[in-house]
Image (tube, rainbow, N blue to C red; front, side):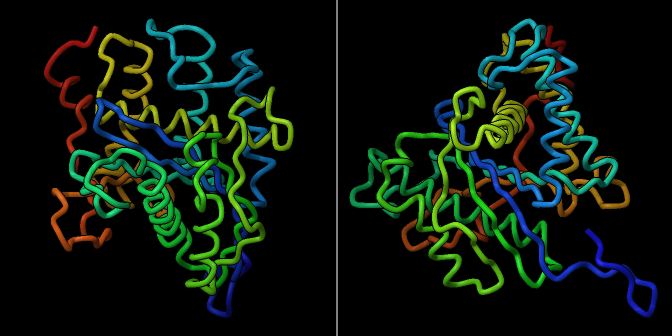
Length: 309
């Protein structure tokens, strides 16, 4: 990714980076939290990224769609095994500074949202896509600004989202982000004029089967991270084991460990945050100041206090 060195021997980054973005969501965790997740991959790393995921499939001998919801409750089997292998790819990518995978996960506390900001009336009914559109744009921009601050131009070669009925039917979700951000940010260039919805099963996706693997990857990342904070199913040993396995990286991100002390190299690479930090009040619609990180990691506390199995 480096362009070379200047006269003083300093590394110089190229002026432009091209990215692919893959997104998914998780709704109503503990009937309270909605999650948005994105995996960002530089275009010149796409082949390598796919090879890593498929190499793990070969190792585990599992070739079907991967979903966090299907993790074996006993912590056994191919789905559990492949999920762990994929999480190891993310851990190693940061640890060895490979620069292939970047991810951003935002948790939205729906109990603290005032839904009157997102359409007529105070109820949440029928407003999911409006809320999601707003926070999806926030997650996208925060990813670009945090992960790639040293580039003069960011070229988005494509945004791919797991199929989701509400969003697919929404009148402006698939084009609004591209239009608004493209208009307001001259350093961000979109090569496509809409977000593509793809099947998360690569055996069923007709147009972009290779990209389905990356949608499955963000599903596993969101599921594992949300389990760390929400601990929704305490009888599922498989999900607990995955969350505990990923917990060291989650702690580095949340506690914002200094870069020199970061074993997994999370800085400018992986991000987890939540919104809002307090109940929204009339007139308080600014997002930035109400995004926070210091939410208790329930599985960490539970692990310290009691034996889980």
